[in-house]
Image (cartoon, rainbow, N blue to C red):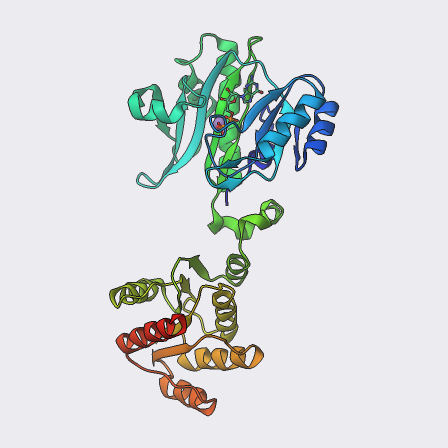
Length: 379
Ligand code: GDP
Ligand code: MN
């Protein structure tokens, strides 16, 4: 899950990182109110899950509440990298002397967190990474964590005096705590600004949380943006199913990620287009089947559905019961093709035929049948 800047800054503030006061606003009127409360010059910033907002016109200064109203109105009308701006952050503006870059990211290859800092932060950091990668200092955090002397040593060459080095090092240490405690896969400050008076502050916050750790963070629920998730994605997450929506019209419900990939490949092979990747996993829970069908049918593009079950730990009879139960609760208005083989296959076949359903054992046959049905519906 990616956090919006305002959420990232809330998290930063909890850990004592220096951020300037601000509040999120959904309308120009709210933005004016927040600006009046903060007083002085404020910065209005688009809250979208995309970088490069500055360059896209999504970050603007306002010198009065009325100007904040106007700038917020402009920014709320923007679409940045395909994402409509639904909210803006209105924050006290900073005077910027220098812009540094400071981030901690998971280096999967080394299996260690990686600190990246640069004296050349700001909106052109991607360009720096491309043209002058040596200007970005990289350092792996050892398994026993980041020490104050290490943080200072990293910033020493980048900053001209000890006071600034201490502040920046303190920020990196706190960022490390955020990264570690909150199970981040990325915690980034860009720009890490140095003001003309010699204060170092986090002017931006980009935080990605590792969804695998969600079970131990109750507070994440409040951060999830309902607009970010379709009904299908929400149901899948709550039921613990892996679901990725795709552009095609053949819905597939499969047990196991490998089989799901193979199923998608075979659908493509026979000229069809999968509507999704959906792995109901290796457990025997009819409820998962019901949810899976609900997810697939919530996608209006789906013209036919294929169940492809290779029974191992997943028992075919459980899947069959799940199918029968769901169809009773809400009959399908698209054709259904069932392929199952493996554990309790005979029992499953009996359950299905008792309810007027049939199943094939051949994956090839199942895939060809479902594509044909999808095409019939389209024609
Ligand atoms: P991004 O482009 O999406 O990364 O958005 P940022 O929050 O990093 O803002 C982009 C740029 O806007 C920064 O690099 C700053 O130059 C500028 N900016 C952001 N906040 C302030 C502020 O409080 N005061 C001033 N003067 N500039 C700001
Ligand atoms: Mn930024």
